[in-house]
Image (cartoon, rainbow, N blue to C red; front, side, top):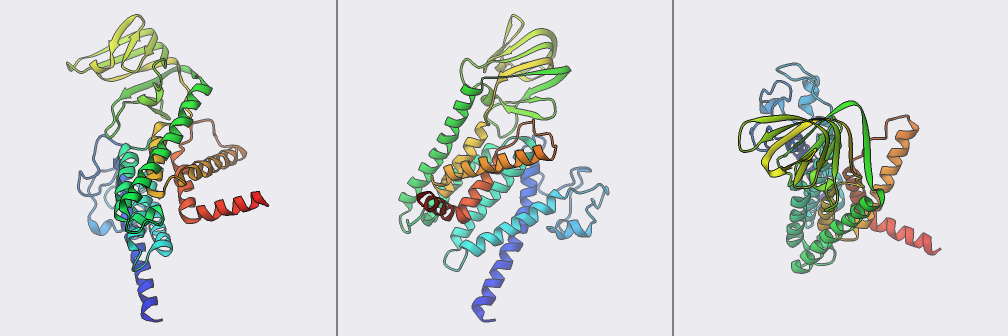
Length: 380
């Protein structure tokens, strides 16, 4: 084995080790970012989600520590989810795959840019799967990072070596196309699908509160439904209606809270009516209650997906936008049909972010070849 082959093996192995370490950090991001009781950088050290005891570095070695500990916390002996080593292994594999396709002595900046994109994709995917949201720091922040990456590595946008301003222009255009297409799809979906009405068996609990990193409050209905306030009130005429329940108001100007029964509770974007009494949203810090039924504008998908598509367009260009949307839609339909055939409950809302991420990855590694093959087949 000559020196160039040895260097290739060394750099590939380094990419894998680095990917596993980054995956360990992504576990922190995925756990902490959607939560309000901790921050990504505070506390500084990783801790057990069960006993909250900080984990020393020698018990936090990616993948290896999980195996040696027998998938249990060293302190409280509670099981450690398989998700942690799986994300570390997935990130390591993706880092190696990207390095094998785009890395090299002269092209390492391209590999680093795509490593950052992969980190965003993995974080967004697992947060969306668990919480049905993609935080703005990953979507809008990711789009900003993509634009900066194109300024530093103009070849991300194609044959723009030495022309960073051109590459940045196309990156911004890709972000605008990504957001614009999904914005149009979501807008049309709200017009076509109308309203969604849910009748509960007995009383269902709900809560409206602010979440760190989100521009709008989040409405949680039961354990499964989480919707951004901005997604409910897309148009001025949109309304959210609860019936036959009670509501607790947490007032901002005092520590008092007030519980009222209602027959009709109607929300607009910035105010609400309890029967005939009007209240301003800005006067309360949190609302929670119970209801017998709810009527809201039906969602096609959340605007977090539109922001996520902007991130994809900023990194991969405008051509990746329709491809990832089309491929993600097909993948989503396939998963839905498989769930249906296997007798799984597929009635609840499915997160679309993971499918967009997979569609974007297909474009990254083989998108142009697939499009060329399809056009050739269509012509013949």
